[in-house]
Length: 471
Image (cartoon, rainbow, N blue to C red; front, side, top):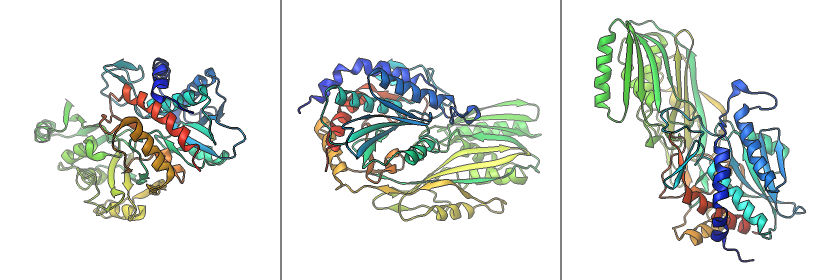
């Protein structure tokens, strides 16, 4: 059966944008404070899943909702025992501050769509859905069943996929439309390391509060601190000098007697690429650490401001490591909090290649505590490095389709980001970001180029048709 995939995509572009705008308008950020038995991750993720499945029902697909945590649609021969999976997600990161438009009121302008989730992952997920529509509308023959699965917790703990694989059989292979082209056939390991302890003060200067970061996999773009000092004017003057010496960041202060409120602005980016951002929290700690703090406030600020600051490869912690295939380890200090007489808390996120272990990373963080009476601990379950050989037929087929449709070079690659592709032994990530396209995932004013999303519909449709029929 011969199909003009690009022409079929063009017929559906207008409908695609309208459906995508509908999905992007759902503020699908996980919120445990509003969790219920009917909405285990809060109303936002549930509402986005239901909205996506409603779109599929409207188009005549049979859908399945698994407890408002994960859902899917399926095409292909019902009698086929095996199935191929396309794994996407409808949850998004918190919007953060600094947007020029409402992050949940999509704006289409200048060839792009602006909204939280446009690039990660509602735009690519909707491209995969429209690929399904083409295959279904044209009744393209498929050897296996194909499921398009929608998760609701990819940006946090992957609760959705843990649930899915408990109650559903595993696919034979597949891909996740949640990264970049030409393909991602390798993903570094992913581990969080947490430091927490008592928050105390005993110096002439008091750290009342310190807060930076929204999620472990985002480089913090804003840091705030409240400090009490009898030398407030002097500290404010020195802060202005610090900003002048560090032009990559900006900030401001408000004073009320001995109370100083600091705001420092860095650059928020995806935690898998911390070297492209500016960590607002560690910058602010780097400034504050030299003042006369005491108690654990001094330890907290010194730790963030010296070994954790301006080092995205863990060199100061002695964990810098590079693998010839998977590349270097990366480190992001994602969440930083201190509340006087409460808790001090730091969350690190490491993306690590084969050849180094989470336990070695944990030991490296412990080596720089310098008397701070806390213990770094691994948080949750570490994800091991994942790799599918370039010779695998799935990898070879997807790269060929990509090259045939775009004319662009096709090669395998490894990233620090983690996608659902790693949940399948022969799983990869595939698009929807093109090599020459801006990457705004997890950033303010997130957007996706419309041409990229349209091209992905066509690429996904042909790719699904071909990999489904692999031996």
